[in-house]
Length: 382
Image (cartoon, rainbow, N blue to C red; front, top):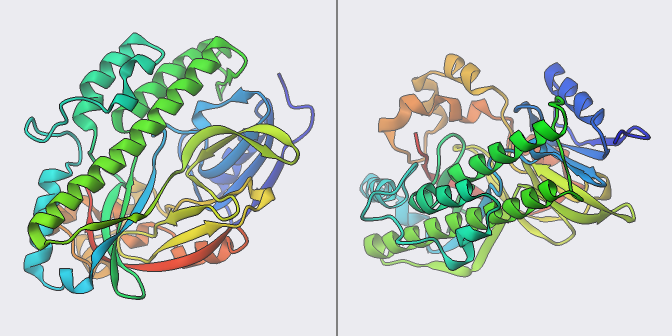
């Protein structure tokens, strides 16, 4: 299958596209069955398909346009407390230490590991027995874990001084394994083209979509497990609870069937927040900059999508070379974090990311800001 016409490409940018990003988008536009591409202001290079794009096809699906961390997303929830809760170093230190024990970065200890996966994640739903075995092993030991890199759990306050938790995490090792399994199949079926695909009308395409659904459900349960663990320790440490009716929960790495421009299309989002009219979402900044709760405006040209964050301004390698420990400490002034990890967090410094205020201005027709939040305490795996 080949394109009978060039796809539409719409862009919402806060700065000129770097040459390598522009070239990546051009290659994507030449792939079979690509009908529409929407480029978000947080776009940056990542593998064969950039983070910060939404892509629509009629029949073919591209695992690279979903990414390896299937179902990666955000959760935000209010805490029944004000910023005074974290006003001193003793309380902040106790919270950071408890988070490290109860919301591990990589794997649970035996005493905190869930006895089994939730019934909704019965491993028999997966398309391959090796994936099912992995779910019973790594899937269980990683359920309720944060991950590393740009994944985080942050305490923030809004303009009314109420504390909110913002959480960014995904499907952990399971998403990566599911992606690798199906990419190998796609490479074989598409004669190892640069951007391998699966046909939704084939058994292989159906199996991938089913496993994507499982990974999205796993990622959702993973975030909820971390929120429940955090609520437990907040109750033990400070006697406060979460307000579950305030929960905002969505993901930004998926492929699903949607109607756009009068036809049913497969919409891939890789680091792009669903922003249909009135749909609530969360857009983080960096660990030292503001974040936002938003509602979508349903912009047709953007495939009803928006940025999923500020987006990287530097690669991790470049940030590690350019940003010193002292600079990170200056940029994080006023925000509690685990100073023992400082040497491992330079690639996550605020200056490694784009200016989130510029990103939000660039997408004013994509989202409506409902709430701005200021970071108080940032917990990251390193």
